[in-house]
Length: 329
Image 1 (cartoon, one colour):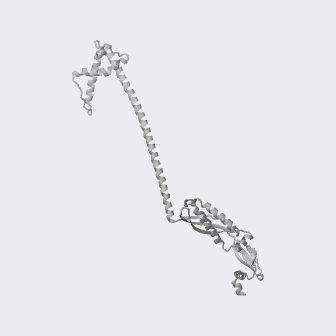
Image 2 (tube, helix red, strand yellow):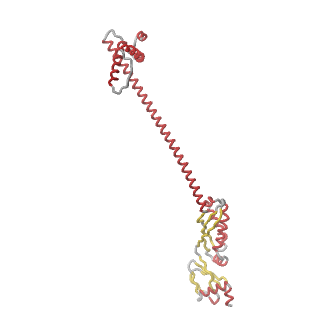
Image 3 (cartoon, helix red, strand yellow):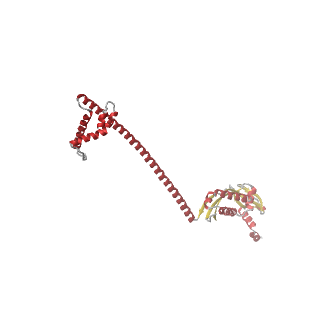
């Protein structure tokens, strides 16, 4: 009979349980539960605390379950839509529901919860990722995580387990693929940097051209204003010369009789001519001037100056030249 009991697994667990509890006293730790059986049949669930059993009635404990939150790491290798192999790591956080039916189902209906959860994770990952390209796997990992959680909740709920979360903790493509992705990203950033640099050069050139145009416009306005002021100065200078000549001629005619305006102007031109020649000779850096300075050329010089200078004198009030003298000249 002893050998028959030893060959039966349930009888073996019962004998081991009785051997562990020879006095019929059972202590259950906090956050743990133990299953109490009588003659191999489920009797009750022993929660945290002290419990008394009746060994003579074949009452013993059969297994202990943890009510703590547990986590398991599942590593799954699969292929994406663009034929890139990736290793995906999923952290599944699960816990037994805190009710007698769930605890009983977790004890008697499921042999290995971790293997069961791992199988469902493989199924969901290998059915979802092959439909997505590699770049989209990183963006849709939350959707994949939610799909894993929903599938595990439906499948493990009937065994008394609650799935709290199933986040994807790592997506690891092949090393060469990662290197290629980094190169693509590097070249993309270099292209963007080159475009930005070209745009900056273009903007700088435009701004420099605008500044040069503004500078040219300002310079042109300044030159025009300077020319205008210079023209006004020359006009005033000529007006002053005309006024001075008029006053000189009138004064000379008033004091000297028998002299007309032409003779007076010829005398002034000759005087100015000799003053000019003296100034040219006095300057050390004056360029050479070749002029016909013979006494016989003075009449021609006076005639040339009168043609260009005295043609405007009739416009000045009080300095009229007789029409006959003008025709004679």
